[in-house]
Amino acid sequence: MSKLDLRRPRLAVAAGLLLALAGAIAFSFAQRPSPTLHYAPNGNFSKDGHYLPGQAGFNLADVNSPAQLESLPDGVKGLVWIGQCGGADAKFVDAVKPYLGSKKLFGFFLMDDPDPRPISGAALRAAYCPASNMKAESDWIHDHAPRAKTFVVLMNLTSRLVPTFGETYAPANSHIDLFGIDPYPCRTELGGCDVAMIERYVKAAEAAGIPRARMVPIYQAFGGGDWKNESGGQYTMPTAIQLREMLTSWHQLIAAPQFDFAYSWGSQRSDMALEDSRDLKEAFLSRNTTPLVNSQ
Image 1 (cartoon, rainbow, N blue to C red):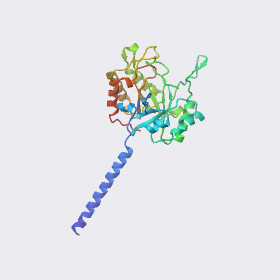
Image 2: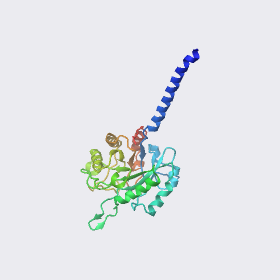
Image 3: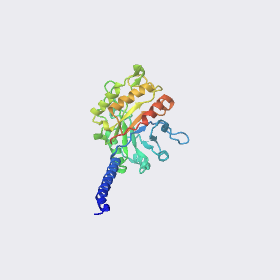
Image 4: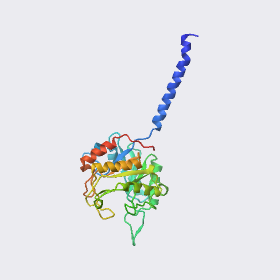
């Protein structure tokens, strides 16, 4: 046997090892978790159409038109606001259809704080939204855009001390993919921030049938203005230190959600918002550029 012949088994073994390694690498990349997205809604675009929250590391945009969605820079996805809760009727279909097929689409924000309770006294609640309508909308989206996520922000039906999400919306009765949990712990009546409120909200959502893997943390990044909380006080803009305390608490409870949510980039009710605070933007930039990954 020649020297060349002696090398053939070794070459074959080496080639096999390289193929196995390549396969393992390919499997690793195919199976690796996706990065957490970061969302800060309202006022996301300048007058000339520039995406603004990107300066603070936000990569999930609040979009309101197909043109906005397609204008997003590389690496930024879009979450489309719907806000109807009329079920999968013609109005809903007309609102959703123009976004289908876009590679930049992440999903649809169906409702913000919908109320599952039909009656207040003798009157129908203005924000009443039956779970059956949410289910019909979510099912329609899943049928026509299987990769798109559906999202809702839940309403706490009681108080910050004993939050309740029972008999509202959960995966079982709404078929919604992701649920926003929004404890806003910084308040005038507290003279600071009740960070323990975050864990109370997460546990209440779990008790209502929502797994942590489906929760979206909502961080307080606003204060003042015309907003009133359930105690009659106002919300206060957190300092950078208070924000970091909230982020730490959330991370201990839900380390890597599919996306997280800072409310709000732009002002809605004459309040101070994230776009107004250099300190908070710097804190979020640091947080948002940390390579967190989710396991979904």
